[in-house]
Length: 290
Image (cartoon, rainbow, N blue to C red; front, side, top):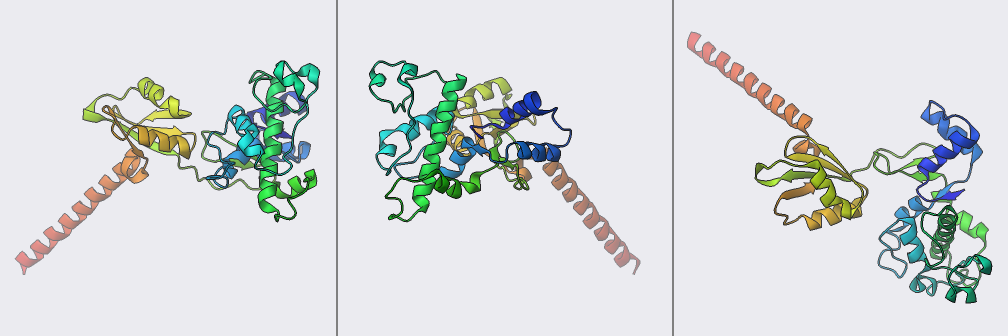
């Protein structure tokens, strides 16, 4: 099975066509894996491969399905590859008159994004192109000078199998055939209204949403924690708000910005000061008595 950012799709398929969702998360993973032992998430693949292809002709920034489709169909990407996989479509299904001259259709002019059939087509093409890029980069130059079989693709994209991307969670992805990765998501920012002004969640959400998906969690009247979708989104927000006249944005540091951590530190400081004061008073009393 191939999909793009398909975590909720998998839950819906299981619930509507297989069985009620299990109460246990671990049981759900095991049952889902028994039904679909080979799952590939092109969102997860694209996120993992983005750094590997950075500063090359195959580089891309956005990882939405439509933007990935455009990037993978870009001539600068396809012409730089030997024997790139193509998708042949029946001429009767092609809407654009100019494109009827060719059976190999790889542009966004043929369908509407978010139509089920067209999204499936885009996802399939993105999957094949990503698999081809991975395989070409792993093979020796002499071996890549001939058409590559799907068996070769399967071998080289095996590390991506059964990993499903997550958004707005403490995990970047879940693993359906093994243990999930450690909780390592650190894409959080701290925003503070300048000059002790009030921080309005609706305004902040509107200002930040143009840079990516964000969640706002207020921790006081003029402070909030911002959970962002990825590191690129975080970097863009930090760059845009370097000299903002109303809000200051920095990377979140739990020791500096967490209310609980600050309370613990202040409590520890007060207790330490109290203990030191008592010890000093006792020493003074002993000296006076002696």
